[in-house]
Each structure stands twice: as C-alpha cells, then as structure tokens.
Amino acid sequence: MSQNDKHRITVDIHNKTYTIIGTESENHVRLVASLVDQKMKEIYNVNNQLDTTRLAVLTAVNTMNDYLKLKEDYATLLGSVKKKEDK
Image (cartoon, rainbow, N blue to C red; front, side, top):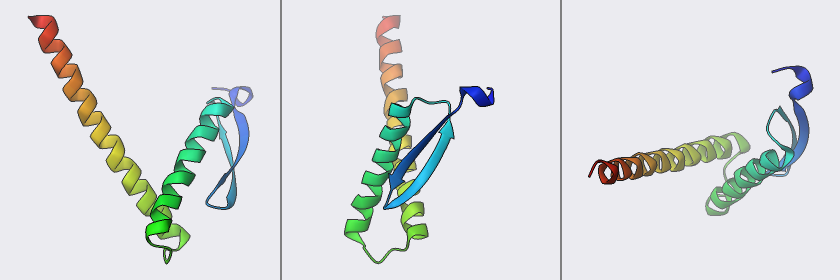
C-alpha cells in the first residue's frame, strides 16, 4: 500500500473533528464515522455524565459485542448452509 493509495477524510464524531487516513472509500469512512457517532450519542443519552474517554471505551465495548454476536450468527448460518448442501 503506497502513500498515494491513501485518502485523507475529515469527519465529526461526538462534536470533535478527526482526520481519517486510509485506503477505504470516502463514503465508507463517512458511514463508519456516522455509525460511531450514532452509537456514542445512544450511550451518552443514557448516561450524560460520561467523559469522552469512558464514552469511547463503552462505545468500543458495545460495538465489539455487536460484532461478536454477528460473527456467531454468521457462523451458525454457514453451518446451516453446509448441512443443507451435504444432504
């Protein structure tokens, strides 16, 4: 991956501006940033006493939890498909 392949995209997350540098498309980066912002707002609305660091950690924990559940569901679906194919 060369420096020329990378994009620099500025996004706002939880009222702060971040510059994301990577190879993903601008639309993808903006979508990810929007989802992170949305999740942070969700958690902050439940507990607005959280400082940014705790809010970010809780957002990461919640997001990883969602990811692991989806990964498990995906593995279960793949197992079901394989069973049907083997019949």
